[in-house]
Every structure is written in C-alpha cells, then in structure tokens.
Length: 138
Image 1 (cartoon, helix red, strand yellow):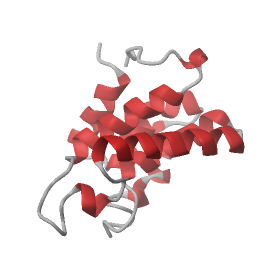
Image 2: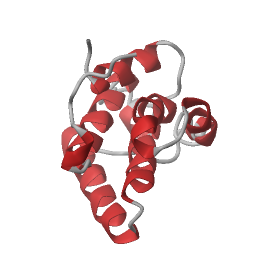
Image 3: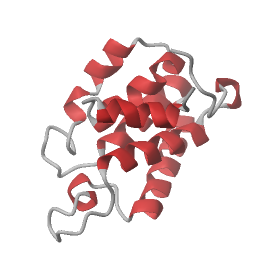
Image 4: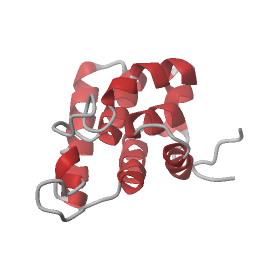
C-alpha cells in the first residue's frame, strides 16, 4: 500500500491536474466524492485557467481540502498560510510559471514534485484524528 502523498503523485501521472491530484486524494477526509473534488478543482490547472500566472494548483488543492476538513475559517487561514509559507521555503515560490521556469528557463520544481510537496504539507496540517500518512486501501 502506498501513502496518500504517493497516491496524489500517481493521480498527477494519470492526467489529473495538480489541484485535482491533491484534492481527489484527500476528498474522502473532506466528506466529498472524487467526482465532486475533481470538478471543483478543474479550473485550477496550470496556474489557474492555464494562465500560469497564479498560485500552483497543488497548493490550491491542499488549501481547498484543508478548508473542507476544518470548517473553521480561522484554522483554515492559519493552516493555509503555513502551507504556502512552507511550500515557498521549499521551492522558492508558489507561482506556477516561476516553478516551471517560464521566464528564466530554470525549472525550480516539476509538477509531480509540487503535488508531493503540497500533499505532505496538507498532511502536516490535518487534525490527528485523520490518521496522517497512513496508506489508503483502494
């Protein structure tokens, strides 16, 4: 059995966008089905709407799931800031085109690794009752 972090990476390899890969991996914890999670996050592909101008979809997917799980705006905002800050510290930026090296030709992080990073950061924010890092039985 593989961890949820690796399941998110596998979803990315199977054609999910970065936001979908993270959100769909954790949607059961948020109380929504995978189709709903996939539809909710479909517009966040490639830096939102394919623009590459905005926040990495993997980070958006993690923050979305965190909000669905917490149901508390203050906890969600605090956890979201920690996810964003940690992601930025690990990768230098949260902006899609900067991660992909569009302007300077230097790829800072491949999408699949952004998915892994965001999933791991989400897990760090999950309440203990959610059984962090445990493999999921399909």
